[in-house]
Image (cartoon, rainbow, N blue to C red):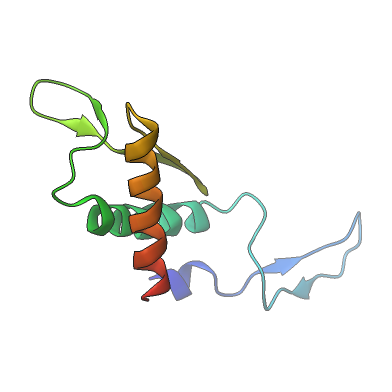
Length: 97
């Protein structure tokens, strides 16, 4: 599906009638990279924050551990120490992959 989404892409410069194929890179305004990042970072954050209640209270039963948007990630916590723990766990996990 992803390959099909990005096949047969071409560009034109200015008012030129001629187009040329784009064989690499990311299309301007393409939503696919942000979607793929969100899926990947959500999985990574679930692995690194599993069984860790270090976030901020979202409701009676849930803590909000992080906020992810496009290619940005914000770790959430009430204490500096817990943020350091999260950063360390994330760093250790990513270095092991």
